[in-house]
Each structure stands twice: as C-alpha cells, then as structure tokens.
Length: 305
Image 1 (cartoon, rainbow, N blue to C red):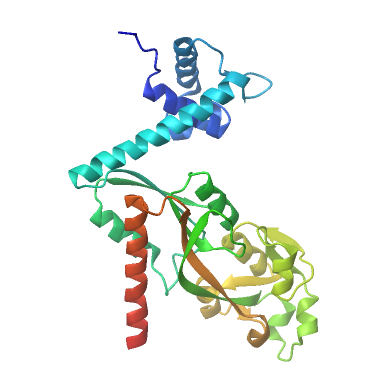
Image 2 (spheres, helix red, strand yellow):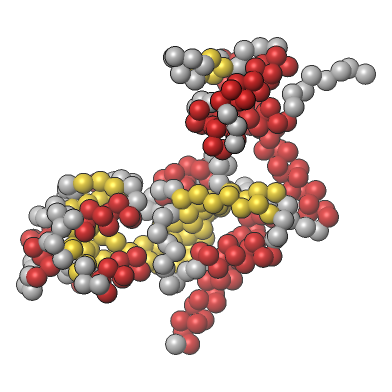
C-alpha cells in the first residue's frame, strides 16, 4: 500500500484562509490564531508537501508559482468536502454544514421584507446549519456568488450578471432627501433644475448611466454604504437618495425632507440570488423556499390591511 502524503485538512484550511486574506496578520481574527502560530502551521504544511508555497516578509505576502497551483487545488478539495458533508447529512435526513449568506446594508428596517424573520425561520428549520452572514455592496455580492464565496445573497442589482439566477422578492421605495441644515429644507417652491444643480452624493456602485437615470449628470461625493450616505446628507452640504424605510426615523424627527417626490422617487427591485448550476443544492433550495414563504406572508398581510 502506497503511503499517502496528503496534508492535514486543518493545514489546508489555514493555508486557504491566509491566501484569501493576503497574509498572516490579516488572518489572525478569522483563524483565532497568533501570527507566530499561523507561521508554524504554514511551515508545517510546506514541509509536508515538500515545496515552498508562499513568500512572506518585508515584500509582503505572495504565492509562489507552485503555491498558486496548490491553492487552486486546495480550494477545490475543500469545496468538494463541503459538498460531501452536505450530501452525507441529506442521506441522514438532516441539513448540516455552513451556509454563506450575503446581504446589502440597511435592510433591517424594511417593512416589506423581514431579513431577520427569513434567517430566523431558516435557522429554526435547520438547527445544525452554521450561518455566516456578511454585508457587502451589490457588486461584491454578485462577484461573491460567482466565486462561491456566498451561497445566496439578497440585494438590489442594477446590472444583471451572466451565470446568476435572480429570484424577485420585493421593491424598495427610494426618495431624494436633504437635511434640516440644507437651504432646500425651508424652500417651498423648488424646481427640478435647482435640485439637479445641487451637490449630490452617489453610491460607489452606481455607474454614470445609473446616476443619469436618477436625474443627475454629476456627483460631489461618493459612498459605499447607506449609513455613510445618511451622514453626508445630514451635514447639510449634500442631497442624496435613501430608502424610505431607512430615512423614516430622521423624517419623523424633522431632520430630513423629501425633495420633489413626483420627479425623483424610484423603486429598487430586490432579489435573492444564487449561482446558476447550484440552485438544486439543498442549502440553496431551502433558503430560497423560506424567502418565498416569508414574502408571501408579508404580501398577504399587506392585502388584508
């Protein structure tokens, strides 16, 4: 019998995490290990496989040519082991493993869709599943789906990407706002021309085409999250779009005002997305079913009111 020199799975997982985070120091939090411990494990892995996988030092972290090939295979093996674990759990009649969920920021206050209810129900129905939840921009969510860094994701996606399945959920109302510190706040008769000439905050994932769709040719500031957008609007130096549900608290306090709603309002369609070819995986099927079920409950309640 040929003796196997297959490396310890723990070493493979550490290696993949280090590569993903581009270095030992960046991986400490996720691995819950010190840099010296990570270095020891990496040296052990290189000793086991008999080749140098990466360089680390003043020049920074970098994979060797062989290390890059080894990384791709290690990634494939770990993904296959995850699938095998899930398949074994299915045979036993239970769902086990980790589901990686991505969402955009600031949807917790959305009345048309309860993300906490969705995840809570999924967790209740699948108590042995470990949930990994991350907040990312729409672009990062789509790239994460394509690269299998996320199993499912929820957000509003202005540009559809090939290879991704989009399951519509609901539409989110957005308005253009100014704060009580802005000159527009006390003005009663604003014109579209006045508004479009004002300093405006745009989201970093908006293209110039998307910006123009919402009535503006240029922006004066860029943000990557709704909280950052709200902060800049509250300074009184900028106007910008916010979801109605997210802004409502500040509207009720008299801090924000909607500008020309008949002209600048729009509705953003939200979807749950997954990679094409993975929709039959039990994790993804069950999560999408919970989303659909929860959305139907919300729709039925809204119709009865």
